[in-house]
Length: 448
Image (tube, rainbow, N blue to C red; front, top):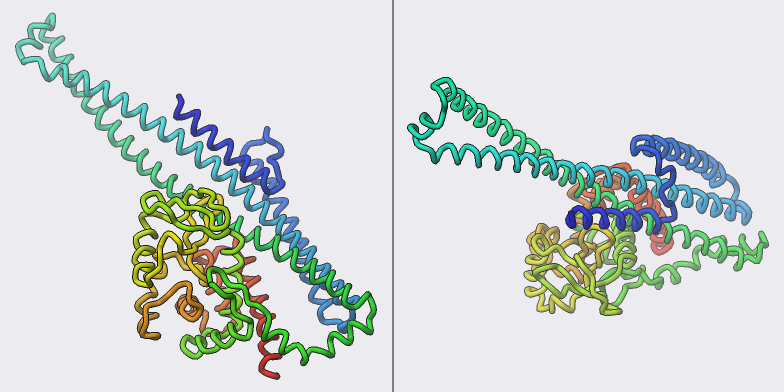
């Protein structure tokens, strides 16, 4: 009873975490999960239609003459689109939360069913064991007649048969239970990714709002001032080159110009174009910095602490999958594994991602030899060149070196989610959008 109560309380707290934190407390609680999902699908359809309409309007506005009013309108449309995308993500998170809740209930019901079957098997085995301990003559003498004796034998055969059936049922239920647990783990991993995207969307929305406010402040709402800004494009090269390119886990963040030179060098080795590589690393570092920075402290449990506060954090690193390779990596580099920064976990899953490329230790080990073959030195996930190279090799493995939009988009999606799942397409879209922006910056740097 205590065990079931504990599960219920954990599920209840999980529901609060998922729904209240993101501003959409569950409504229509009297509806069935299927009905709730249907309503969510209708809301999602509406949001997607509104996003498509904004995309069409935005495309028209961007083709018009560059004026201050048009630029402000474009930024307003981008903000409206991002707010709709945040709403879309919230709906998907809520739908997945319902699915997780249903799977939890199914797992609990299946576990109870297995326990009931086990109890029935135990009772049968107890009866059979008692009968087995009697000798043939004891059984024969205990019955009133030969007919009763054979009836007892028949009952034992029935018990044996029932026992076999129950064993088969338990086996099937256990297989089903494992499937459900796997599904639950995958759903929670997907929820983690959706929450990551949601945080990125909110940050992107803040950035666009700041861009609009800055534009209006610089131009003071005057068209002539805006046109002056446009004509100063060539003068921006020095500003672009010196702009800080924020990266996760490095001691000193490079300038954009420095990052570009490294990306250009890596491109000559892997074929991954600099703007695309920089866009992926930019997005990954935003994830890492948003999640936070942690130190691993317990190699058995994977627990750690936050770098800035020393606050205890669970699940900093997966103790079976990632701790052993992490210890190998840090030992080879002469780093203290307990004073080396890795990403903190979010609400689900494990942290432990390393450096600008945000590779998990187990993933890094798959690329270690390839990095050594190119650089002739042990790869360091926190060293900019090595992390850029590892990211480019990964992207190249999935078509990111072909320079085609669709191929790069697909490679970015796999980099983030391990597969192409359209629920996370915002990530791929944002990488490609940022790559286009970086391409323009690079043109200015190259004087094109």
